[in-house]
Image (tube, rainbow, N blue to C red):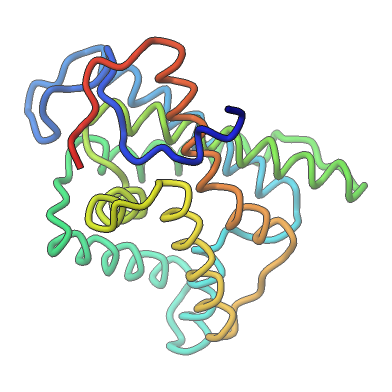
Length: 225
């Protein structure tokens, strides 16, 4: 059925999946797909920035923390990421090469791509930019998660919560992003239409990416729940 992807509950093991998350000698193919996925992820976030319809949900939360604590936006973002990583402990999430490269590659892509992207004044064009950004981020997220070399802080929180709740990935991720927006707004952060489109759309987009990758190459093994 057309909405089967909304029932996806696990990151599949495909031909580019590493057999272990934490390893000093990851398979080259896993690293290549990890990097490609993260580049796509960063490109999708760059589209969101270029659309000019509001920042990402986690940036809304960081803005709220800035207003309540007086920290800089950079430090607020750092401490939020550190707090999310701390939540990995009870979820038994394992970091890896992907956890480190997540921050590095996405930051590099944003820094290089955003200044070169065209800006469109029309609302319809801006919304289209956001939609393309959400879908690109979702596909990139799926590709790098399947590499199984460690998720970024927020993706690790998503997969950890999915494992203990048994809920579809789309629901878990959307629930996280919407909760973050609400918390950020309550703290004084500012959101826009693009923020809401991202919050509601990124969960289904990641699930769709996982579904399409699985359909394209076939599952080798799906982790047990």
